[in-house]
Length: 257
Image (tube, rainbow, N blue to C red; front, side, top):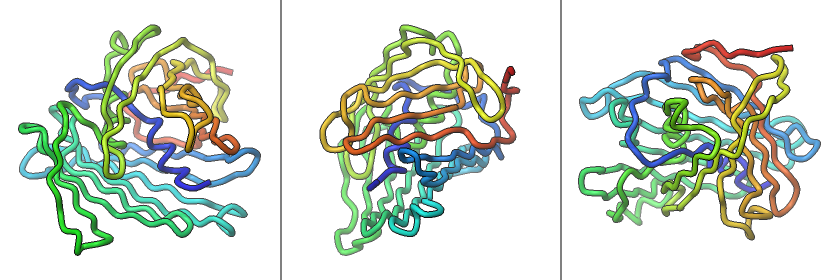
């Protein structure tokens, strides 16, 4: 159960090149219900707000995750993720990961300099450690910005057979990912059935996941590219997140009976 919301964040990944966030509206909200096996484990919420950061238009994204019900009684999770994403480039400028998961806590802030491909990492939990400058790579994403990057793609850029490589900044290190669009599938939801792209991110097996292809993500096969369902086979048990409610999405979602 440790870091389950971090795992959810890892799945919401995208491609490497610049893309305007034209199809994301300010005030959008996506709410997910998370299950661990048969247990109703928690909730995750993503919200957006148009703002300015360092004098440039940005999309402020906040992700909140928490355990609920019986699960919270023995494993308390309160996670906060924040990202300021440059609207014109789709790249993150500032990223916050502030998590409390059982006895595990972590609070990092990261400032990105895409011009010289460096970032500044600050450990807010241990101020004595100060800040350090780390060499980055071109087009690096954080866990939240990568999610909205994916959604900003034109439908012709995210079609069956697409394979993309990317680098995502997670915690205090860079992780390489590969994203494969393997097909389409009709997914049953509480709102009705919706046609989705089936995406498999390649991840490292062993410590967390059962296999490199143990994660599957279904996103709406439309201009929104909203994650509808996420499933992961973990080293112990399985984790699933389903869209529970939504509002202020730019394009209507098309559900059928």
